[in-house]
Length: 329
Image (cartoon, rainbow, N blue to C red; front, side):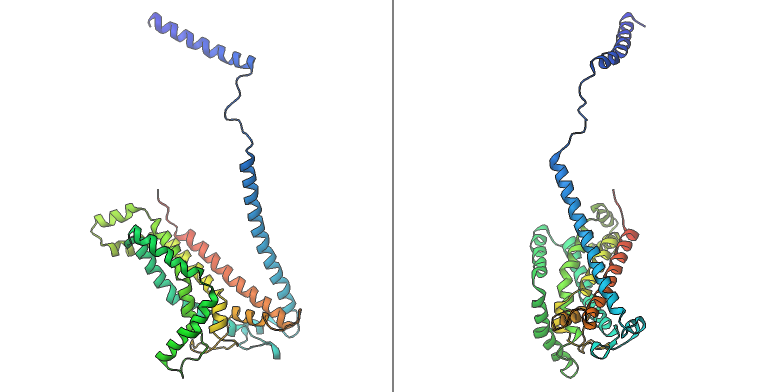
């Protein structure tokens, strides 16, 4: 070892030995990584916490009110659970509280809406994601979003004044009644097409382009790539879009209140008039009902059942998203 290297090693050892004593003696400079209170970020964090707490407390309050009023309904001698969940006649005036006429009408309108919205919405999403240019997408997507801003009352009268006469001209006025669940379901499907297409398109565009390029490299066409590569990769997001759309269709109010019918009817014919759960709530709540009467409390029982239905749909949606989620780096 040379004399210069020995001197350098000695200097490094001396600095390593002396440096801690200097820092201990002097206390050292303040660390630049010391935590500093940022009042702006603290205020924003507190505001976001309050917003989350308000939303949670609001949900708890809604469930509490629905549960309390529903218990008052089920506590009356005229009502029992077996009749409520097994009866096919809903006539509170004579003490008949079978929920199935309202449930079947809700399921029929929602099913028709899904038959309209899911294929059309998915087709629009595939076009916007895989075929449309950036300029076309920037024009078409805002136009689709305009449908969301149209009041649902307008959709209801559209179903009554346009869709119902169209169905009556096709199938005959003797087959299609003026108020029917078919026209209401079709218009609800048109109403939720932007919801399905927007959420599904976001899921499709989140798929990495490397998968598309790999499919093209193997000789796949654009349609084969979209249906066999991109769509399966985005299955969790597309499924979540479908479940959210179903929840939206089940909870739709004004379209069914205007076009479906104003009386409970246990029927599976979509061309007959029937009243859905939300339509019945609107009609009964707008009437002259005394507070704490059995008719008034029945609204909360229907609302609680509707809440449970949408909650189950959201739980299924969350499970499907976690089950089929694909993560890419």
